[in-house]
Image 1 (tube, helix red, strand yellow):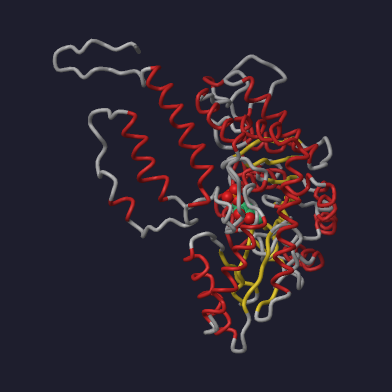
Image 2 (cartoon, rainbow, N blue to C red):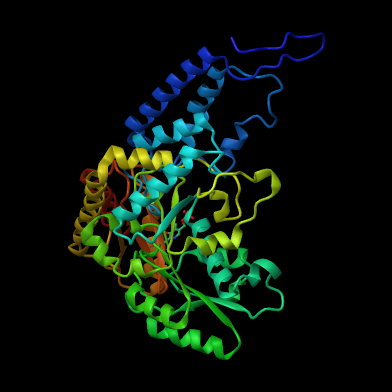
Length: 489
Ligand code: PLP
């Protein structure tokens, strides 16, 4: 039994935690719940049949005054939560960038929760600090990046990118932005293609640079940044008193997975003395396969690179690795040690120095488990199989009258649309209706993007459980829904 205080008159019992035996039994049941879920997730429709507010309406408006038995918690999880999530672990999940919470990753996440360690300092978490250094260095080797890069783990690519631009700001202002703030200084500019992820916009907002100072560099017909246009924009900004600080090259854009010409962009950044950040949140994972490392040529020339193991490296959300060529710049930008955080170890990494956050979750445990459980070859095999399935799907689209493949397929995401004689508006309306019909069927979930005004459907393969039969089913549903909409069904 856990220690309890005897109930003095009128005083509530103090229960320190779940009794150990009850906790152990509940953990076993939770293991069964998760294992059953993963085994049967494909039987759910990917999107739950809920309308906004449905779940809230079934939840008590106020918290319980007295503690409830753990059985009630697990029963409500099974009844209210599990059926009403969008099933990201479903093999028919083809939306956004599909992801995988693998068994090994879930084990790591669970054990990390048990430790509840907060490795803000080496002293407050020696093993988590050193495991984070080790696993990120393993990933660096897997991606064939030079040893100079040092990695650490953030929650998301959005935070990793924000930190990279904060480092760029620090370097460009020689530390003035940290000491004096931005008031009175030259307006700073950041450059990215017009296909860049919205996290770059948000970084500019959060860092006080202002959205107006995020320059959208035009792209070529394959949605890749034009280095010549980049250079011209930087020079124009210098003439008008701006301080260009950073370029963001994307390796795998969100819409089409286009890869900016990183080597040429790096040459401009070098000539102009700008920080080069590479957003490889999704496609960086492909760099672990030597043949895709070539597609990502020039990645090694960046000052910073973000890659999300929680996107395409089978690691449960959240886990984003930021690699820095000169980690000292980010450390200088943020290091600050109040008296209560001083510790005597020398030559150790205190991860609180690498950003505004103090506390941090033990995320490297799940990444360590994932890499060890699959092995590098196992991860490569999955990525290659996803890319092969995407190419096969693209072939089906190309061979089908009334459909068109909209973009090349460098990785595992396919952009396509139904075509019909008519105006752009009519074509877009057809594809919007098509997407609604496909997703209403249940076994698959896809989303759209817009390319030069055209509504385009994306099929993004990235779940470890996705097999050829799931992609074939998606294609069957797409063809059937299109035939119905055209009145041929
Ligand atoms: N960068 C790219 C290219 C993305 O596609 C995404 C999300 O899909 C992000 C950044 C943001 O990722 P996160 O959700 O980890 O912030």
